[in-house]
Length: 180
Image (cartoon, rainbow, N blue to C red; front, side, top):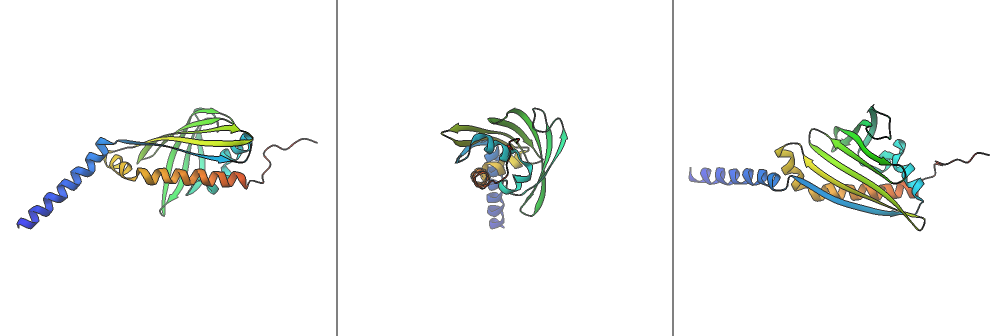
């Protein structure tokens, strides 16, 4: 009987510790960047091309516009993913956009709320693409999970930006046809 009390006590401490992590660190933030050997206008065009999103965003399936004018402040879309074999939908709202320069978006789901900023700057014909993210769980459980998964979430963004870099550098689509 004594061992059962010890085991239950240890389990209770682990559960309390798990939830304390979410209270102590309720959000995660991280920054990522890549350098692309293409001009900024092409980098922007590829990053905004819905047909190419599955090439650089892991698990991306499709995007459905819900309201507003796509690609403008206030536009709302549902973004569909497959993550670990599970279908997932995230609501995206564009909060600010400067074409060929930056976009700020808010993402919400049952699990988390994320503020995301993507910026592009031109340097000697190349483009630096950087992102900044602040994410927090929607509940105490998800806050604790997010605190524990922070490094893997940042690693996913590093992978996505690396994939975007490769997608842009391999791009053969002409976004800027000239009139004859």
